[in-house]
Picture (cartoon, one colour):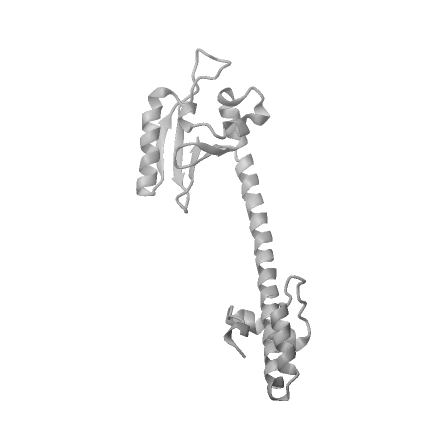
Length: 206
C-alpha cells in the first residue's frame, strides 16, 4: 500500500463513532461519500492477490470508516447550522421588536441595521412610509441623524469605543422631524457598545 491510499485522520471521537456504526450496521453512507475510481482499482488489485488480500480488506475497512466519519461530520455540521440559524432568527426577532431604538453600525459609522423603534424615531430622515423607515436608514451615516452640535461628541465616542473596546454613553439630540420643523426631539442617552468580534457597533437610545 502507498501513503496516498491511507485516509487522513479526522478525530478520535469521529473514528469511534464511525467504528461503532460499522459494527452495529447502522452506518448510512451519504451519496456524496463515494470511493474514487483509483481507490476502487487499488482495492480490486489487492484483493485479487492472495498475498495482499488481507491488505485489501484492511484498506476497504479504512475507506468505509473514513466515509462514515465524513457523513457523521456532515450530519453534525448540518445540525449545528440549523441550531445557529434558529438562534440567529430568534435574535433578529428580538432586535426588531425591542422597544428601544437600536442601530447597528459598521466601524466607519455607517448604519447596517436598524430596528422598528429606530425607524419610527428617525422616520423623518428615512421615508414617509413608517413601516419601511428602518430599512431606509441602512447605508446612511449615523451622524446625519443627530444635530450638528452633537456630531463631534458622537464621533469622539465611537472612536473611544473602538480604541478602548469599552462601552460609552453620551447625550445627543436627534435632528428635527420634518413634520415639526420648529421643534427638535428631546435629547436622548446613547449607549454605545462594540461587538465581541470588534467588527460592529451597537447604539441603543433611551
